[in-house]
Length: 255
Image (cartoon, rainbow, N blue to C red; front, top):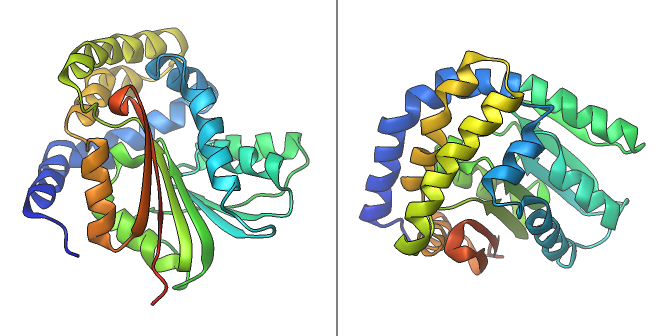
C-alpha cells in the first residue's frame, strides 16, 4: 500500500514550515534541556507523561521475547530503554540520538542503575545498521522534530521480518474541542518550563514552535495510515484524550 497524496502533502508542508528549526534550532535546544527534559514533558502532557510511558513500555514488554535485540531511535535520556530493562534485563538495547548532550545524560542514568545500554550519536534519518537487524524498534517523543516518512522507512528497513515498531508521542488531537485549549496550554507550558529551567535563548525561541509542530502533525488515524503506507501491518493504536498522548504498535510483515 502506498502513502496517500494528502499525507505526502502534509509531510511536505511540515518540512517547509519547520525544516530550518529542525536543522538549526532543535540541536541547540537539546544542548540545554537534558537535566529538565522529563519535567518539561510532564508539564506538556498534563502530568500524564510518566504514567503513559510506563503503559507504553508494558505493552512493548508483553510482545518481546527474552533477550530480544531492541533499537531505541531518538533515545534522548534513555527513558524507554531503562523502563524495558526494568522488565527484562536480558534485552540487548542499542540507542541512537542526534544530541551528544542528551545521550550523555541517558548514559549517566544507565550507569546509576548498573545497566548497559549501547549508544550512538547519529542522524535518525540515516540509521547506521544493516537491514533486518532488530527484533523491535522504539521511538518516543521525537517524531514532531523529524521527517517522519523518511524515518519510518529507515526503521522498517532495519527491523527483522516479523519485528515490531513501537511509537509513542504527543499527536494532534482528533477532537477540535480538545485541540484548541490544549495548544493554548502547550504554548504556556513550554514558555513556563523554558523560563523556569532553561538557560539558552534557543529554548525561549521554541515556545511557539512546539505548539505549531503539534498543530501540523498527524492525528492518530493519520499516523496509522502513514505506518500502513510505509509497509507496516497489524497496527494497534491507543490514545489518551483523542491524541494528546498516543501510541502505535505495528509489525514488519514476514514475506
